[in-house]
Length: 131
Image 1 (cartoon, one colour):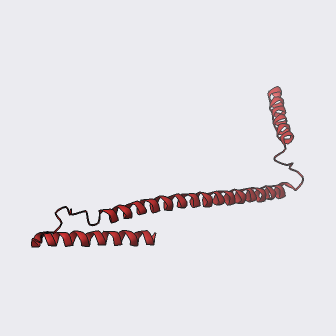
Image 2: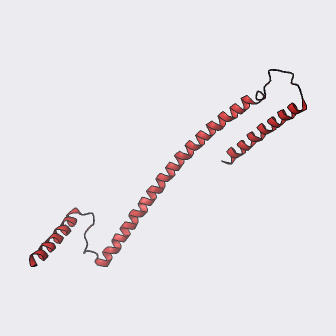
Image 3: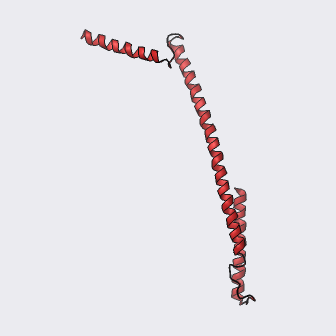
């Protein structure tokens, strides 16, 4: 980034000096020997080349920066996911220790979940029948 800034400042300074020199020559009435000489003719090619290389450099710089940022973002997301999973496991162990280590079954067990729903439904039916 520092190189790009330095290159831009250098190019701006060079163009400014050439424009100032041309303006001084025109004010002084200096007649150019070559009548086909245009104001921009002296540095058109150099400015075009500089603009082309700056455009290519900028394109490559942003492309590589984007690719690097995507790789870094992928690693950050993977690390965050791993930490969340680790935290969930620690929390699950904490809850199990509060209720007694063997009183809870694995939360991933579908049959345990279905049994809890069935027990809850049975409790609701029993309450409804007592009314």
